[in-house]
Length: 494
Image (cartoon, rainbow, N blue to C red; front, side, top):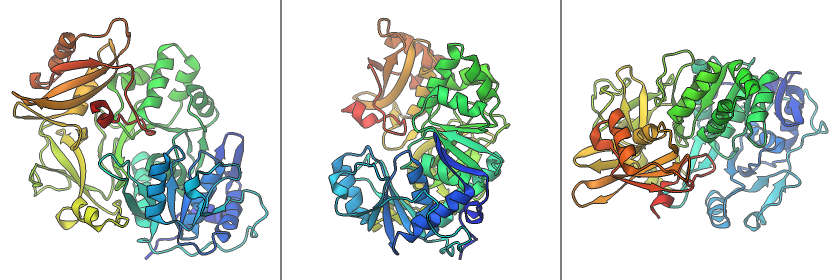
């Protein structure tokens, strides 16, 4: 069963701007022609790799493959040879979509290269649009970060892409009149699915900066862009420029309809700095590779920094205890207990879920509980109004200390409000008395005057329960982060 084209505006064509990367761009009529020309060159392939550089070719390539009903495997151009070899060997693409001037690594040498065709030298603009495949057909195979082993390929069906993008449109009042600006990588959900496919499904436009800069954001928002997608490291740079008195940036952000942050927690300090300078609140949302988007703060709703909103339309969400039992089985939509303190693992269910892990039936079975609930591995508390507050990953961020379950995320947020702290990460380490002790990794705002362990412990205890204060503080010059801005805590431990 299908529900019409995944990209109805592309299928229809038209003169409205569709997608641009700097000076290179296409309107919907030219995008339609480019997509049809490129789709015709895929030769009936079942699965293709996408060399996901921040270029117009990447945007045309992914839409062309999806229009043709071909599954796309996005590749991170910054991946090492070993990781790329695993992904290519596991997914077995029949060809690779890449720009003509891309230098591809040796692991891709055996694959036929198809360059997305951007010129008008393709099928006539009146050529029929391909028939829409079944909604359960795989759209994308997106590989996880591989923090607990080799990366796993999450099979994302067309149904999940459609469901998530339409739910976000409802939550954010996202329409064809919106113009999105961002500079996110295009090998993952945030930049590719939300940032490229989202605007094109709505019939709006997307302007990709290629490389992030506050100046680039300012110029695009001042020139008609209405929405900004970013990760916390980007918003931190924006907050720094606002603190430095960039009036032009403040005015541009104030004129935006929607500012969205995702992929990691946005520091409360940066959230408040942006709001103070612009009057605009940054909307946070929560999702992951296997589920696409689960929750979001609604624009204009009462929003407390640190929360990621309530479930999107069609998403069921609940918290479960260590035994996997829901806190309140009678209220799965609301998630059960809402005391703002009890930590549980998030489980979700809905049409936004992936189909399973490629070639890994064992991992797929382990990922799901009864009745189709997906075990996210994310730990959270629910506030009285049902808003979700993520406190960390079960594998790296749940600290069991002195009989308490502590989420690292809420401690990190409080630490980052201390004026002497530029960045903070929290981990747990074995302790003979407590089981685990809370350890804070601190990037000082002034390396010559780092905050002491005592003052940070007092600071945390003033905002959270005393048992959540750090027992040890370690100063570091920087926190190790991946391409999406997430702190790699296993690297800290090493």
